Length: 117
Image 1: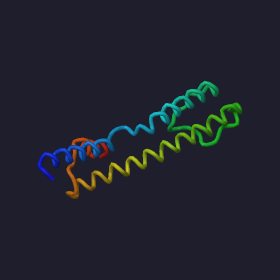
Image 2: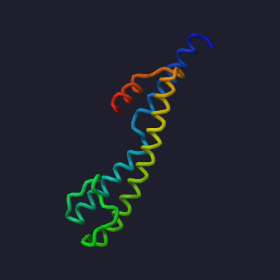
Image 3: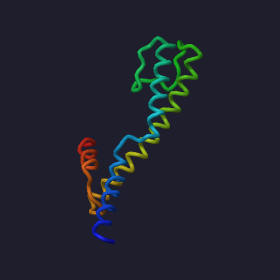
Image 4: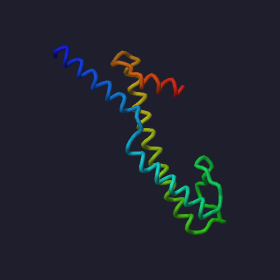
């Protein structure tokens, strides 16, 4: 491998590492759907609902239409959680590899670690 190709390879490797620290494009439509469902739930129930305090089961006082929305909300939220966990695992793996000298620690990797802890 020539010095030029090594440099190009290195830049590609760093770019790929940085992509792990960017927002996962697969989560964008799910986040939008989650927000839309939350908005519909607020409209139907008349309550100021927040994701952190969302009930797992619909209260008796909620209309039947809200029951399906809540079920859909939790399905989307669960998928987002799964994708976020996978992404965090990838980020941690990249950080540990760089910390163990198996690659260069990019600025994005360093920022992620500092912001995380």
